[in-house]
Image 1 (cartoon, one colour):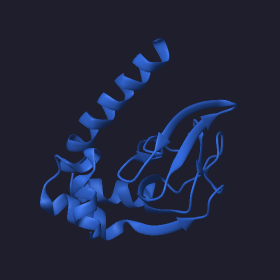
Image 2: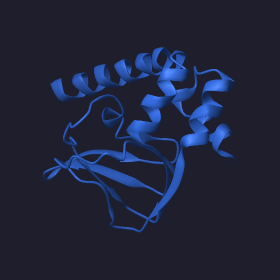
Image 3: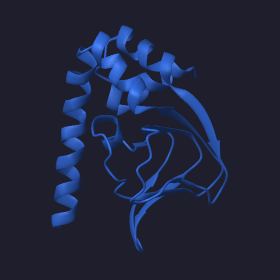
Image 4: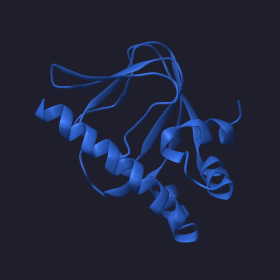
Length: 139
């Protein structure tokens, strides 16, 4: 599956136009991590941005608390797309060898200037995810 097809299959970009998804695919880069590698470190101020898992598995933790497991198609690090200088809220570690697509904050912001409809399409999905996270924390 190519990047455009893969991005189209993820919930975050499912409502985006073909042009928007193609623009995102153009700036997305592939990276690989080995089992046990830290992809994101809690409290770091990484500028990398946002990750979509292509292959393998990963987990999110905050301190000693397990927050989530990720499989291909899942994404994490999306807060970094929108907020500058915000510390990472969790550690994400590879639980197998993984391949991810990375969209940096600066590339995403540049896309929004030329394709503002991406922001509208993505904000709704991010708001739903935030609401689900809040609900899970309340339970």
